[in-house]
Each structure stands twice: as C-alpha cells, then as structure tokens.
Length: 174
Image 1: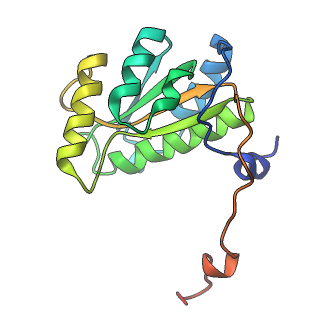
Image 2 (image 1 turned 90 degrees about the vertical axis):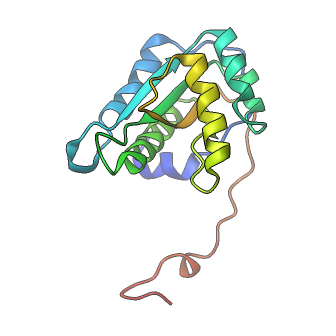
C-alpha cells in the first residue's frame, strides 16, 4: 500500500479479533519504530513488547480509557529518556506514529493509550508508576504510551475532517 493510502486509512481500533500476531509481523512493526527519526540522532526512546495475556490484562487498568486492551493481542509500550535528549517526547511520539502506520499497512489495528500526561503531573505520575511497576521500567524513563495491537474486530466509520482551508495555511496564518 502507498504511504498516503496508509495514512488516509488509519483509524483507532478499540475491538480486536482473537487472533495471534505472528512474530514476523511484530518484528516488521518494530523495525518501523527502530528506524523512526530522532532529534540529533539521539536514541531517546525505547520499546517494550508485551504479548503475555496476563500482562496485557494488567495494562488495561493503566487508565479507564484502555478497555480495548482486553481484546488486544499484543502491545508496544513506548518510553522516553529525558536524560538522553530534550526531544524525548517528540522522538517517542514520532515512533508511535511510525508504529501505527506500519501496523495499518500490515493489516493490524491499533489502540492508542496515552500514559504520559503533560497537563496533569499527578495523573501522569499515577499512570507511569503503575506501568513502571508492572513492567520493571527504570525510574529515569518516562512512559509515553501503550499501543495495543491486533487484527481489527470492527470497521470504524470514515473520519470527518475539517475543510483543508481551516487547517492548512500558506505563507501566513489566517
């Protein structure tokens, strides 16, 4: 599939089929994460692959908004390293986008679970501490997101976008 077609077809999936993700497929998705660009080529993001059903079920409790983890067949937890780069959040976010597009291209769906919360430090600490404890993540890492993966068990509606003229400007903001 051409990259623009993948971008246009990408949707968040919140219900997955009970069908295992092949290791080769997961490795292709991880290649997309691994090769995602970083600021100054500093590798300030890391990825934890979770396939164990018990752990996936535990991760569902990270926030009340991740009920879709109950049917996800795998997850990638994306972390950032502030001591490595001041661009850790951007680096991790770009990798999340690459993971999402690779998953879509390979026929998988993805649910996005935000863990890091930039506007509510207390909530962020609560979420990150929970995941940190479950997956033995070192204290110097920030936990950006949990990406639940699986074969789509639903077909979401088409996206309704604003007119391009409301979003894209040339030469100056209008």
